[in-house]
Structures are given as structure tokens and as C-alpha cells.
Amino acid sequence: MSENVQERECSLLLFRSRNLGVLFLIACIFIFLGNESCRASSGSGALFFSASVVKIIDGDTIEVEHLGKKLRVRLWGIDTPEWQQRFSHKAREFTRQHVQGRQVELQSKTWDKYGRLVAMVEVEGRSLNEELLTEGLAWVHIYYCKEPICRKWRQLETDARVARRGLWQDNKPVPPWKWKQDHK
Image (tube, rainbow, N blue to C red):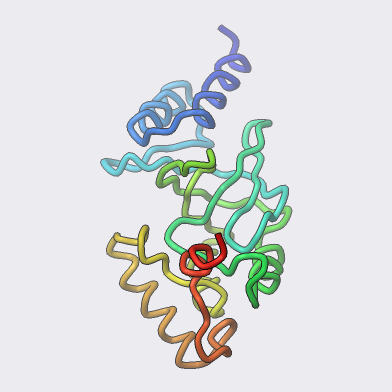
């Protein structure tokens, strides 16, 4: 089997699988095949890989290209305002300015019901997830952010709120998960 065919098959498996155990297995395959663009972290089941950002969907969703395949990525642990909410366009623009056309490092977490990879995103060693919180353009997601890093992230959100940065300029900004419930 040629190296190109192996890469394609591994890539298809990577983007279609919906199970972290399968992601870990795929990462092992990448390592076994000598492809250093993907690596598994020891013991966590997370997959780390580099990709190029080709499109910004909104503040917390991007499209990347990896091994010739496009993949939608939802930023893990945070939530930016919905399109009809105030500051949604600022969150999207912030994300665009920081990652559009650039190489990013992704740390996979899971897949969502829309088929998007949910991941932490880094560019030049800085976490985009954290940067959005620091600028007051996102909330820590109360339903999904349950890991130790979320404590730090809640502090970043609190600091932005106290400084009245971004969406915290409003007296009572509505988190997107509540806004969606009220606008069904």
C-alpha cells in the first residue's frame, strides 16, 4: 500500500470517527506509519495535530485543512455570542484576525452532534479559547467545561467581566445557551 493511500485512509478515518478511543487508535496508526503531523498524548486519548485555517464560521467555529481534507472545528469549553446577539461579529472578527490563513495546533476533545471536531486551538503557542475569554468575547461553557483548566478559564472570564471588556460592557449579557432556549 503506498504512503499516499495510507495517509488518505488514515485521514478519512480521522475525520469520520466519533469516538476518542478510535481517535487514539488512529493516532497510533499515524505514529506507526511515521506521520509526525499527528501525535497522541500519553494516556489522555487526545489527538494533537497541525492544520491550516481556511475559513472562519463564527467566533467559536473554524474550518481547517489537514492532509487535503477540510474539517469544521468547534472550540472546546467556550461559547461566543450567536449571530443575532451583540458582540457576535466582534468575536468572529477577533477569531479571523488571530487564525485566518495560519497554521494552528489542535488538541481534539470529542465530536459534536453536527459532525464537528471539538478541540482546543493554539496559534503560535497561544490558546485561542483563552484569548476569546480574556477579551470578553466568550463565556466558559457551563455544560461542557468540566476539566481542571476550566477553573483558570472561569477566572479569565471573571477578569474580563470586572474590567468590562467585550460583551461584559453590557449590564446583563445573555449566554448563548440561554439565548438559544429563548429563541427556539
